[in-house]
Image (cartoon, rainbow, N blue to C red):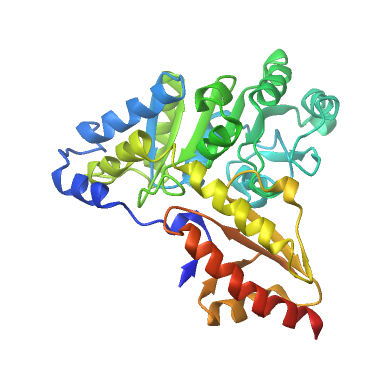
Length: 341
C-alpha cells in the first residue's frame, strides 16, 4: 500500500529504534528524565525560545497554549480554517473563536485582523491571536516570517499574546528557505510536531518563555499528558531535530510531482499555487470523494476523502519518488473513469 493519507503514518528510522533501546531514562513526571530534558532544551534553542515541553500530541500542545492565555468567553482571533478553530480546541480551552477569513493562501488581511483584535463586541475582548504555519486549511501553504511578524506586531501593540500552531513549521521553513526560528520569533508560544514529517513515532513540543512553559507543564499534568519514562520517545525526537529536517525538501518535490501529474488528469481540479509543501488537495468532478478513496485503495493507493469531492494526499519519508509515480499511474487509470460516468 502506498500510504498518502497523512505524514503522521511515518515509521521511526532504524536509528530511532536503536536510540530507544539505548536511551538513558528517568521519570518525566518528576522532571528527571535526562533524554526528555535534552529534547526540550534542543527544541527551545532551535526556535530561539527559553524552554520547551514534550507533550503526547499536537492537539494537546495547542490546547495547553490556548489555556495559558484564553479567558472564559473572551475572543481568540484566528483564521476559520485553522486546526485550532476547526477542531474546537479554542472552545475546549474556554475561548470564543473570533474568525478572520484569509485569502486562498490563508493570509488574513492585516486591516481586518487589526479590527478583530481591537473589537470588544458584547464584552468579548480579544485575549489571544493564533496563527498556523504551514497552513493545512489552505493546502499546506507557508506563511512568511514577514507576515507572521506583521500579524504578531498588531497583536502585541494591543497587549495580546500570540500562539503559533507550527505542527508542520519545519516544512514551512524548508519551503521558504529560512530558519524555523525566524518564523517563530514573534510568537509567545509555538507548538510543532515531531510525529509528522520529522518521523518520530509520538509527540510534539511546546516552546516559549520559561514561566509559560512551567505553567504549561502543570496544565499538561491536569490534562493527563504527563508521561513517565518518556525518554524512550524523546530519543526519537532528538534524531528528528538533528537529522530529519533538511530531507523535508524531498517530500515537497514529491508533492509537486504528484500535483503536476494530477493536474493533467481529466476531471481533476487542483490549484498548483497552493502546493508549497507536502500537502496536496484536489477535487474529482462528478465523483463522491469517498468512492474515489475506496477505488484507489483497492488499487493500492491510500488517500483521504476530506470533502464531498475533495481528497488529500500527503508525501513523507516512507513514500518514495517511485511510489509517487506508481500512484499517478493508478490515478490515471481510475480517476477519468469515475469522472466520465
